[in-house]
Amino acid sequence: MKKKRLIMVFALIIFLLVLGLFLFYSANFSSSDFSVDKILIKSVIKEDERLNQSFSINNLGERDNFKIEMVDLENLVSLDKNDFYLDNGESEEISVSFLGENAVPEVYAGSLIIKTEKKTKTLPIILEVQSLDTYFAIRMDVDSKYKEVIKEEKITVGVNLFNLKDTETRSVDVEYKIITLEGETIFLEKENVAVGSKSAITKTVQIPKNTKTGNYIFASVLNFQNSTSTSSYLFEVSNRLVLSQIINEDVFQISILVLLFTIVSIIIYILSERNKLLLKLKSQQKSELKFYAEKIEKQKQDLLKRAKSEKEKTKINRDYSEARSKILSGIKNEQIKQRNELKKLSKGKETKEVNKRLRKWKKQTYAKALEKAEISQKLKLKLATLKKAFDGGYISKDSYKKGESRLSKKIRK
Image 1 (cartoon, rainbow, N blue to C red):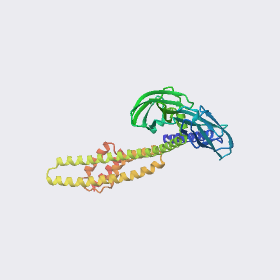
Image 2: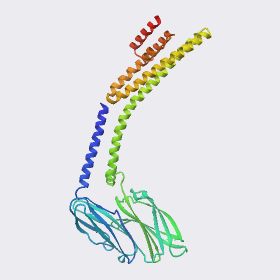
Image 3: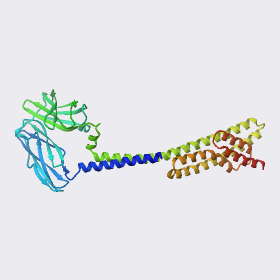
Image 4: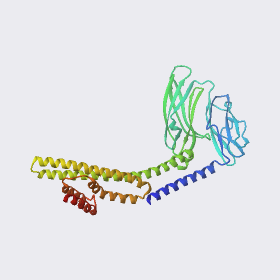
């Protein structure tokens, strides 16, 4: 009954998970859903330069109106369209123009908010504007593990500086910033660095405690005289302890893993219950063999101590070796039958019935083995072994008396 209740609980969990997934996808992947072919738009341009990029929106639901809003980069980025309709399966390519003539050299951050009646998605934008004639180049090497961090976690970045003009050692100023997609700087640190033809810096920055979850830009800006060079990368601050945020990151994969884990747990539980019974039987059988082997050996040693001649000792050794071999062989054969029967029982019977059978086998194994063994000598000694087996709790009183009766008859013959 316990096993059935546990399986019912697992089945209920699976049902609730499937129902939850259905409701989630019904709410989040409704007829208003759409896809964007990029997760980030980034451009590096010179001041006074223009550069065009594009991205596509694909409507996965019913006909809907799409509106695109620019956040914080209105004077630096423009779109060729920001209001249009799409039918199911239709897509629209939007051209994005970056306008360097309106900006001083710097790293700028913003985003595009793409909206339908029921759905909203954010597309981050990074614009790096550099000087027309750059004296130095700067590049950041970032480990992939820092693409997603938690509050107060430290980010370690490799910053490489290159002198593009000569091999002289120059003193340059480097700024490190963390910028929101609304263009707000939440972290700023400056340092002066001596750079020859090439220099490498390892920079560690701690995410501020009060940082909200979301996307941010880590930027490095190198200034030397009238020359400015930039480098940046996008990362996410998340709270991994919040289950809803974890699920929202990749709900499909995580849900599948949970379902698989639940199903595998059920299978493992059922198999482990069978294995427990089988292991219990094997342990019992091992103890039986050891017990009877020791008892037979003890009786042999007791008789050898009382033997009056070498000839009598030789006979005792021979008789007991033969008896021991036949009895233990008979026990092993009985045990094989028991294991096979247990495997059949565990598939369709209750655990209570299987345990009842285990207790029954514990009392009958030796009696059956002794009955089938063709032993013609020293049967009285076998009775003593049988009696000790009974005293040890391996056979029942009834089995003992029946065995005693059978052996007594053989002795009389």
